[in-house]
Image (cartoon, rainbow over all chains, first blue to last red; front, side, top):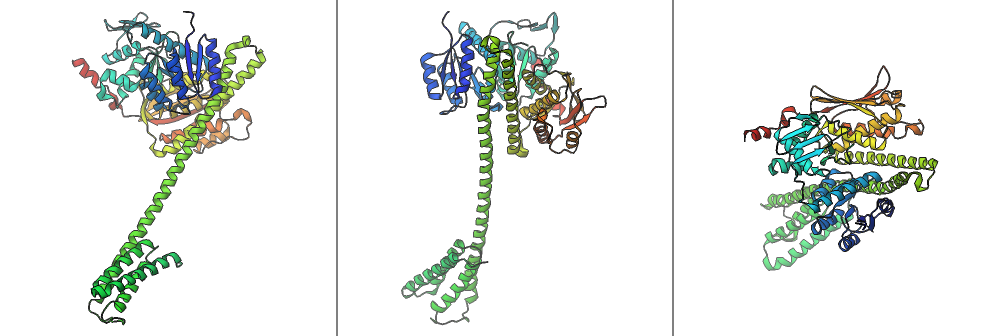
Length: 239
Length: 365
């Protein structure tokens, strides 16, 4: 296990890839860099890195296309999209194409490192077992979700949830740490015929949060990704 | 109208051509109707190719006279007493007038279309430039704040003295501030480009509030905001990122300019068919002139206040434009016991539309 994990940084701006590389090397990774989509694809296929940091604004090709191609050939390699544009459509599109996470410029070093650790941990978990978590009892801090007994407890207190609320919590738990888009969650729970209206999901989520007594400014369990979806926090990143 | 040489030329040329063709045909056919048809074609062409009505009308009158003189029995003299003469006159004039009218309309239409295309092209170019600028600004800003945050994360082990680390922390702060300004400028562009057609999606108000406070605390960990949120779920049609920008600007404004770091208070509650959002700080209150501008709903301009107030005007005026696009108005007052209070009302999505009806179906199964 002494081999350093390789991270491919695809970024056409050298000043950015510079500091990212420095920070990641300090974090114990081996860093590869590419400044164009062409180089990125070549290095990706020849090195098969442990993770890719992909800037979507590349000089020779749309980063979204590169993302799609990488995910088709090697879906197991996690890709974190780095985007300069905050428009939500792009994030949703990247996530739908299989991106594992995204960061918006500008970002801090600690944020980037935390996202990388999470993505690598998920990838490791996936390679060990089946694609999604199949546990039947989930924990996060003091929250416990017992699937076979259909029971949710916070500490010692049992909280009643409706069928849909329970399904939403279960879905989030099974994909802990990942951003789930509204449309995807709705398809999973209500089926595809509902996918145009995400209000039902949102209201259910608001009720879940009330029952869990979440402080919106300091969520312990579920984070809102504005305009995109929800993410269940993990022990490490929980505030 | 000034006579146009080009149009005059076209008229003479086409009439001459029609005359020549008629002359050629005359010995072969001998029937005067042919020449009339040829002249109608010429008149139609003249009307289409020239500006306005005048050339078409003149051409049709001339045609009638030419046909009468040259191609009707008796040849080479006028005989205005012929029985079908008014009919010939009218059948020349009518197509000339109709085609001229159509041509004029067509030309006007094309001009309008060209102007519209130019306008959309201009708007497209403008927003493309702004998108490009924002991308191009974000990239170096990311590098500046990222590199600074890397050096800071190294601490004194990185070979930087404590004083220098402070300077680097200032660099990081200002880079982040510039990023917010770029964001503000982009928001305004987004508003201007979409105009009244900004697509508002129903969003849960408290999600936007939570998200904006998390963002602000990432930049200013010492910034505290207490929440007093409505127990009822408030759903507001909005553009979530723009609405977040409003809260980010107001909270940052309260944090930087209120002169205190006492926790602010953000509250929401239903008032009739509206949601009331209030942000109150416990500092020195808003300056008189800023308050006046907000009350008169004029874009806030803050000048000659020194650098410590930089960004306040931009931030607040962006809030005003975003709220306006949400059918709302930014309001403010200074509280008697001290501190400034910003508030605004937002439309609510009608209550009964968000009942989860599928839940009952589910239970019935």
